[in-house]
Amino acid sequence: MKDKNHNANEMTFWEHLEELRWHLVRSVVAVIVFAIAAFIAKDFIFNHIILAPKSDDFISHRLLCEMGKYLSEKFSFVSSSVLCISNFDLKIININLSGQFLVHLYISIFAGVLVAIPYIIWEVWSFIKPALYEKEQKYAGGAVFWSSLLFILGVLFSYFLIVPLSILFLGTYTVSEAVENQIALNSYISTVVTLSFAVGLVFELPVFVYFFTKVGILTPGFMRRNRRMMIVIILIISAIITPPDVFSQILVAFPLYGLYEISIYISDRIYRKREEELN
Image (cartoon, rainbow, N blue to C red; front, side, top):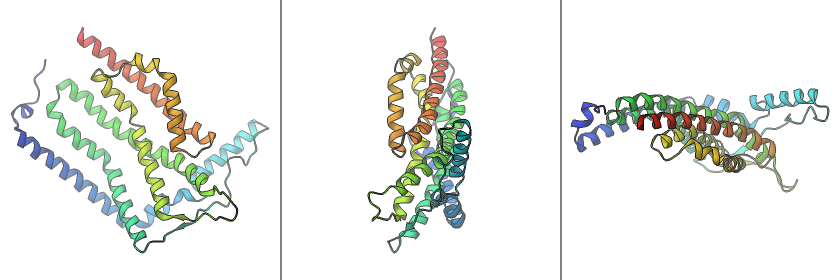
């Protein structure tokens, strides 16, 4: 067994707390710096990012329209306008005196956290690194990169697919023609932020599987045996985080199932290495 880092052996409890404090301070400073930058870039953040999915000229809506035209050429029973959106521009209103300022502040902080996520993960890694064995440091370093990348991919996947589909469905759904949809700013912002962050966390599945397999809680055999149950769970998750239409759920379910299969492969590799080390 290899010795652990010299600093990890000699640092006292209070020294560990002091070290943790500085990691937290640096993380908070990074969030504040990025939040200030986002606050200053208000027009770009809101007009080109946050509010962009509410319009029919958003890139995702245009790509879906092109997909519909392509499918109509291949299959005669598919209408060319099945995925095309026209005259869609959601009305966003603010009814609170300080509403727009508070939303501006909230989005700036959220943007700061989002952009600083890779650095925050790196700070967490830097704190726990001295307590790991040399071999564990090698694998954990890769986990920092992949956890950051997967979270960012999850956020982008949600923003460009789940968010616009959700806004389209919920923003145009009516119980009566006599009722006009005028969406509150807070409601719109909450939907965009919640969906983006939630899917970002869901995309961390391979990282969780890696660590659970590493400590012996999870095995690839267990994941294979429960594949059917996981498909049901994935469909349920897709139904929760998307509008209640089959097309949206399928678009979300396929990537999530792909992540599950990748997780099985990761678990299998870690499990084999773990068995070899034990033997």
